[in-house]
Length: 190
Image 1: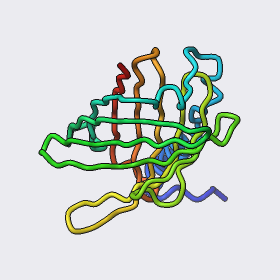
Image 2: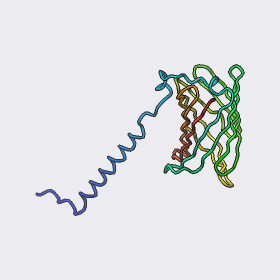
Image 3: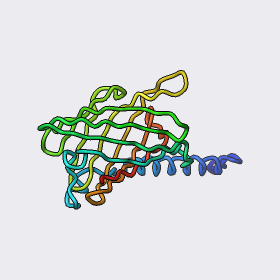
Image 4: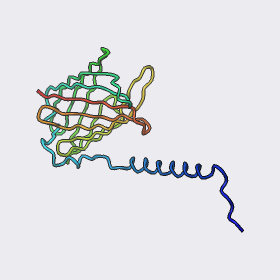
């Protein structure tokens, strides 16, 4: 007795299924690749001390890009920071390229051991940050008005101190795990 012959069109379908499963597995593994952690920067200099860097006046220039990389909005931020013990205040005053203005006042706490927390009126809950070496990684939820609606978006915020005057900041914005866009900032401390 002879084995049954494969039905026409079945092998290409099986190959497509195998290819689809292979590509899906590769995408899952790529998504599991380890993201950077503050500990990766522990040996980097100069050391970022928020109480020193965010003390006094600063200015930052930034932009928001959508997920395709298109610049949606540019802005300038005038900042003033002050600290008393482990408590800090950071007053941010934004001027956007469309002429709108916004203010955010952060209330920061140095929890010790490179850990920081922060609160502001448009932050849902408490921002959590970890600093090591020249880097700080913040995680928080920002309540963002868009037109007539308000959305809570997750922020994965990295600050990297370049030298005593310049710090670069990149923030990935997401909602339900979907990447919405990025905020890029360059801080300058006189």
